Image 1 (cartoon, rainbow, N blue to C red):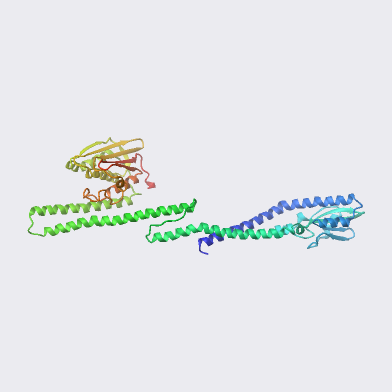
Image 2 (image 1 turned 45 degrees about the vertical axis):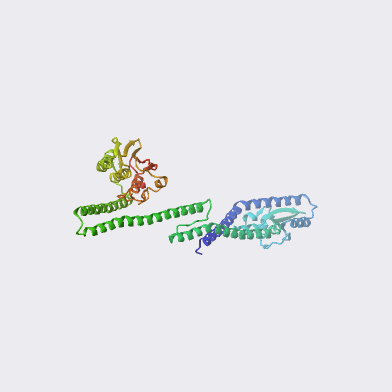
Length: 466
């Protein structure tokens, strides 16, 4: 049976049967080593009491007395020296008994047939209705030596109960099978739902709802599945946005370049217009170049998660180098730049972290207001460093802050504020910071400026866990 339900049900029933067999074997061992000697002792003591009672009352009617014992649940066999024998109570199934056993008891010894009965199964050992499965004791009656062999009449004792026990056993087995089948269905049903949901998910439908509200491992699995579905839906949305944005960001400059190249074919335009057209073409080519660089950097980051080039370097000197690189743009926008960068050494990938400072600084320049300000500070503790980029720019709304790390997302839908932007910068920054086991925090209000704070561990980052 290939279904999980069938396998679970069969496995459970197999375990029940195996447990029953093992219980039977253990019970048998317990009977053979403990109960059987105890039963032999009990029957022996009772037989000796009978012997004593007969010998102390010479006027007793032996036949009537033994008939009475047979009626209350004992099987009795007596034999004298002359070979005269009598049976009382329920008949033995097997009357085989060795002459040696009889002679031994007539000689005054006790015969422990129950304890010496062959090691067979529990049922055979306890219920075997055989003469040799008895206890033999000697007694004297009217100056005649007798050997008395006695055992409990198990069949008579359990005559009313064995049918009840059989029904109880059969009912318990049937109920167990029914309950196992129901419980298996209950356990397997949510897995069937998960299997169906997986098929739907594989077809690209991420709007799945699983009605599984269980507080166990299957419930946790369903919750994890729903969480995965939501993340896949987000990834799918980002993928579509990525295709749309890449198509736009590539197609737009290509279209512009083609248009201006067509204008350059016009022999009647002035030299000044030609130069302007050439500048625009160069600008659009720069846009394409920046986009390809950012995409290559993002791809490089994804592939370098386990191959970071960790070195010790002066992070303050690196940030100053970035400032010097973009000094002309700061001056061009007439921005006031202040910074506090005490000499600080840390371990990390210098190439990747350079991109972090570069993206944060260019964002502070790009989205700032005319004659605005940029403040950069570096502080460190015993276990971490904190780098802060604060600008007086246009700021961000709450709904924009939630998406600023999405690839190709631009806070300004009109793109007028970010003609040269690709929408990949902050996604790159976040990826690099996380690779260094750090975190980035943003604080911003619309029209009130933005502050990005990068917190990195001061010690060597454990790249093995990336």
